[in-house]
Length: 398
Image: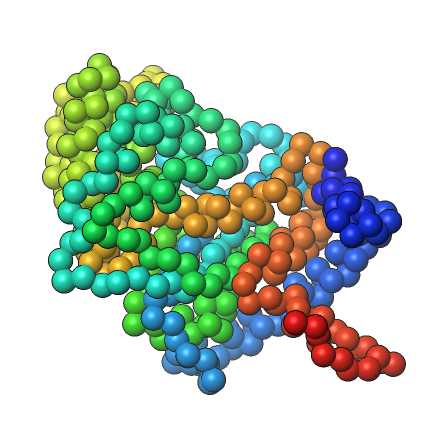
């Protein structure tokens, strides 16, 4: 069933409205086009501001105590155009999208105001038991689509790790930040255009004036390019679950499970403490024992698995100061934005859902509006009614 057919069916079931899928499509295109135009105009106005104003707080806005931005990507099928050079690579430098002819990536940002406590010392120095339970870690790494065949468990699911947030909350003395309000930004545009859109949304909410600011992402370089260009004053944090998957894969590479598990539990405790350099040193010793990977080695060979872990942890070591983040009350997992990606995928991704570039852009904007707590569509309808000739202004019902 197509996306618009699903919407028409939902209208009939929930509101007893007989509306064709074509009519739903026409309305979505009209409203989506207007909302994209508003978004682009707002972004252009923001970019035109002097730098001092762009990194400040708008008049009348109060900066939140804790502002968090996370970025990631989902997937959908596009019927027109070739794959753009802007399509990102995954953490290993390989195409993130599968090899289907039509699959493309959409870009999604989640902006959150959060609440949390700060501490003088690490409130949780020991890695939570959730991260050292065998069955849960095996399940967690499968759901994360770990790309190491040493795990023998990579999947094609786009669902985020269901245990990721629960795992991070499995503590007695430390509670992760809680989401207060969220806003979403989504597009099919290139990353160079996506960045200013996210920055505009952050500025509008006063994020740049927050005393505590964090930027969450996985190891994809596109995330950190966006951070450098627009959020360099935010504390950069590598998603702990992604780090875990690389540590687990490297610990298991060319080892019996018992020996690999012992290595993993020690390494993940060190990573939890932020002592990544110790793990890197041991990984490099392990790499020298196995030898450097050659072009003949398969992607899942122990040499390549360990080599990828060395590169991944080495490239992200400055974003893995997890004990410091816990003291400051900052989040450590990107499951929030991964869950948001799943919500977008539910609307735009499916074997029978194909989009033109314009149709995808319109629907992504409408989906972002619908999922945002600040109710941008409600304000849009007020503006639209007030601008219609022959229409009386009215007050929206509560």
